[in-house]
Image (tube, rainbow, N blue to C red; front, side, top):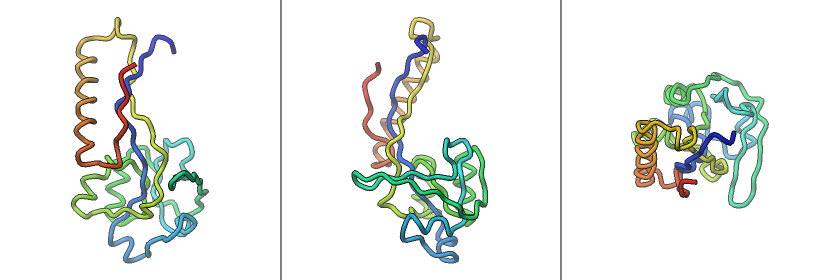
Length: 163
């Protein structure tokens, strides 16, 4: 829509995560193909919730997963909490699980395989129609994501200029 303006805030990569208890009980997958043998937690609003795409180096792969889907929902925090409780392996942006990684509640599974970066943007009406409080909030978000680079070295990178 030509009346909309996007401001790029950063990029986020998706990784796979599970609790130590889940991995002790079910084992840790050593390949993408082994993911289908595990209990999985899916983000239901993904365009392909049953197919996970990964990138390793310059190589991209997608894996169609017919595993046991324990939970499918549209809330990443709920999925992260379910993974902490040992319900399965979840695939989420690192910034949603950063606190759980820091406390050891979650561990990264298959760390060499992550998604291609997904762009995070704030999309609003054209600047001349944007309320000042919306502009202030977008400035806050931009600063917030800039600060996250300090503790999310792979999660949010490559901030672009405002168009």
